[in-house]
Image 1 (cartoon, helix red, strand yellow):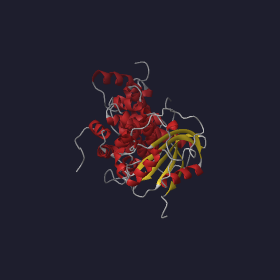
Image 2: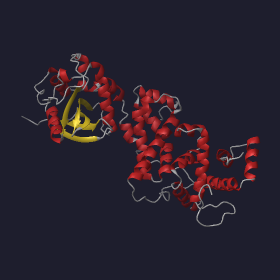
Image 3: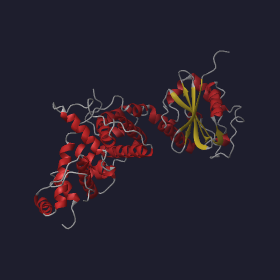
Image 4: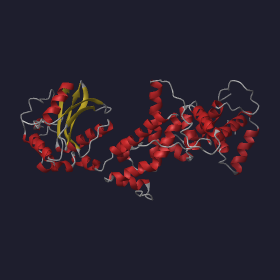
Length: 245
Length: 195
């Protein structure tokens, strides 16, 4: 035992040694002032650590995580917007506008070529449960976010026209990525705050998901821009449905 | 009634991934004390410990689908916890602020009826924060959390031999920070670890 056997001193100080091993280390320690001194210190440290007791957990420690681990999570991951939302009339109206192709292409005309060019028409059953997806190079700012929130809240929503639409095979992946990113940023995506719109775009030049959540009960819409790298919230806008005539 | 009180963690993970959020709540309930205490010992104050523990459970929501069961769930969770604490310490170094005093006095449940014990614990916790981070993690996991060398090796991603030597170096550093002296060592400024 030529070098100082730190590893074995850990065992010895912790009384985790017996037999020949223990005798060998003890023989070394007997002849090594450095190890003898350290062994005494290590034993003193262990005795001191024994004074540490368990501290109580603050109330609500798990709440943020539990809020993001709702039962609808898996369903939402598979279906995009949870099936529960499909029973809501207001939502159905919005989806009808979303997928019948409206007059909003001009307003949302992408500034660069779409990422996925497959124009495959979405199947009706699948479509009604998924958020509108769109890839554009559009660069959003606060004003554009607000405008989008108001359009969706008023039912005059953006259309996911075929040139900008994702291939079916990519829809779930994009929806999941956006949903995970929103949750990572602290946005609560649930069956009552359903994801109705996802756009891969930019916000002040940074690659971002522009996502809209619709509250099925109030009809309120929240649009969030979240960075695709790092999932940080870059901007938000809210809008309520128009009141009266 | 506790949900799945005698179910294995790994079974709860499977149930959660199958869509049962109550299984996730049970995992949090089972592990929050150990996770929070590990954070508290590594970071030294309740506020940072709470943030790091919450970050840990939030990471869990995101990462659980990647849990392959190669290690026990608890081992994997402590690894996530240790990483969250490491991130918190890195942020702290980047944004130095006045550290609050170690909170271990009145809010600490009394270890026994001796009132001097709470003060001892605060001294030890303060000294622990002077131990280099990589040694501190090994010491806390072994001597406070009572984990085996092999599990610590998995949590920290280092060989067992390295775990042991870090534990030893950490204990020696802690003793020096507490002002303990080697037999025959004269009082005065403590020597370097290799003195």
